[in-house]
Image (cartoon, helix red, strand yellow):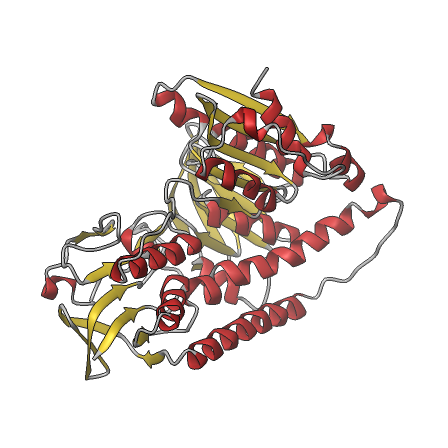
Length: 446
């Protein structure tokens, strides 16, 4: 009998397993595929490894502006091997930590039998608590031609050993836009098709529009308010798109289907145990507890914010609840980053959301081009936008160099509800990019 059985060894699952083991609990971790889940093997880590190569290419293209002339040879096979090595190294690290923590790793597909039992490979395992952390998978579209093997998911795109010369990306969300940015930097001719009015539809409109403008300037073709009807062809694909009342045909070698992700809720015995769920995910309360008291669900499988760090911290919440320990984790403020050129990062509500809520808001904005460090780095694109209500920050949205780092300036301010007046008394070092954030704070008081 285990204390906890965890289904899924992604960031939510393995981090929970390690933490629970540290607390003295006996833990079994069940994984049908690879330790590390989608994030490590097919998502976040391989994508960001490629992003680093793309970033270097972008930096080299700007070298003349810094007084240097640089010539380079791009060898994708070496880039691919490096990505595989990074993933392998991190996976080995996780497996080492699990072994050291005496977490029993069970390889196979877990199926719920009853509220305390899980069947894996015809063997039965029992525990006081069960945590479902089975993640999500890429959504597909049932349209003519979409079953062509050249229509691929982001996982399949990352597995390619040869670069496509022409890539059409269907879906202008985070995955689609990141892949478009990276593979364009690698030399692919990239076109993005998005059915909504803007790319990254859930982001602050001003940020999304600015990023779209930057990407177009770089040479990425973007079509919004556009719908794909079918894909024809074999070696050369023809994508039929209706855009602004006109039908167009996009010719490419590969099509990346990036229209979102769906929770993995099928074929795991949820109905056998009576757990409430839908195709949008497993229903949970604030403690990530299902309607079956000793069974919890964390991460993408809940259909909530589909981010690796959300999965990790929801696992911590579950463990604290099981151990009857209080925590101060604030799930209302979860930072999110988009690794494009330039980067985008956000936390809290958008300006549009604030207006819909009829909040009386003030907005402080500061531009990279007015920051000494940004100018010296030749990274002047972008701005910081802070939204406040009643002396409290409710949203921060950044587009610009190292936005993924700069967004963490906002974390203590929003989590501790620090007043704008007090925040403006904090001293920022000069010259640093953080001063862009500091100036935006001061703009709130004008």
